[in-house]
Structure formats: C-alpha cells, structure tokens
Image 1: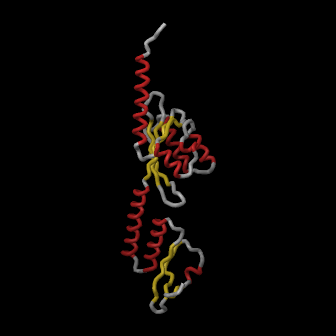
Image 2: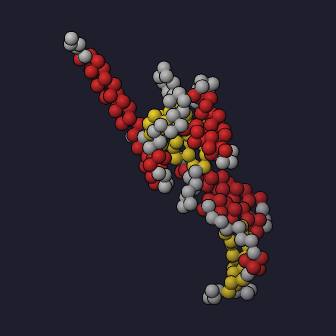
Length: 220
C-alpha cells in the first residue's frame, strides 16, 4: 500500500522554513532574547544571548540553556539571598499565567570593569500552547546620560545656592565618584600663601592623613 505524503512533506518543509525565518529575525536583534514554553523551560535563545554569555564568562550551559527551566534558575538565586530577583520571578510568572499582559523591569548588571544597566521585557508567546518571550536590552548609555544630567543639575543648584566653596565641592566630588564609578576622590586647592595643595573635599578615603595632608608643588 502506498500513501501520498507530498502534502505532509510540503507542510513540514514550510514549518521548517518558518522556524528558520523566525530565528533569523530574532538573531538580528541586539537584545538578548530567550523563549520559554508554558512550564518555563527554555526553547531557544538568540545569538546576542550567546555572545553576551560567552563574553561574561558563561559556560556552554549558560550560552545554550536549551531545556533548562528559567524559573528554577531564578528560584536558586532567590534561595541564595538575591531578593532583587523576587519581583522578576513574580512578574514573569504573572505574564506566563495570563494574569498580566507584560512585564518590564530595569536592573543593574555591573561588571568588574564597567557600569551596565539593562531593561527586561516579557510578553506571552502567541501560540495555543502558551509560553513567554523575554528580552534583555542594554540601556547603559541612556542611564548614564540621565545620571549625568542629574549630576549637572545638582552641581548647578549647589553653585547657585551655596556661597561656601567647600559645600559646592562636596556636591561636585559626590557627582564625580558616582559618574566614574570610583571608590574615592579628592579635590585639592592651591594655597598661594604656603605654595601647597591642600585638601578641600573628598569622598571614600577613610584616613585623616589624607584630609590633613598638604602637597608642596614640585614635591611627590
């Protein structure tokens, strides 16, 4: 007995082409994208996800977490004491369960060498079996621009409202430390009477020696 399976083969080929097309579109995105099934199991990730994982020391399981339960990873982080993940886990589950249409969350993800912020967006997967599409987009430049504007605003107010130079310098130092991500910073002012640089304001240094120190020009 012979059965004509031409239509079935054509349908399978069309489905494969549709899946390849969808994956190509997702791979073109700069955001890291992960797709989950209705149980939270990872179905696929895009190339941006893989590149980010590899660039940040992730192993092959992190770069290609197919079959891993996304919520199990979040739950382990919560059990380890990371309370910031609680809101994320609850928001994602609410979207997956249909209790909310989407979930958007901004979060810091700093590395040892740079400050970074990301925005997570989660939407239900448009299919009968359900699921979730989650993207993580780097918004560091936007956040830094906002922080720079806020810092400049604070400095402007300090200059306009304070006649005390040291109070103004304190605002400047705080803004500089925050913007540069530094552990400490000092401002030294030149004293023409003693021909030395003297401490005027600082943040982060814990010793009184720094505050009491004077640097004569031409020395050190």
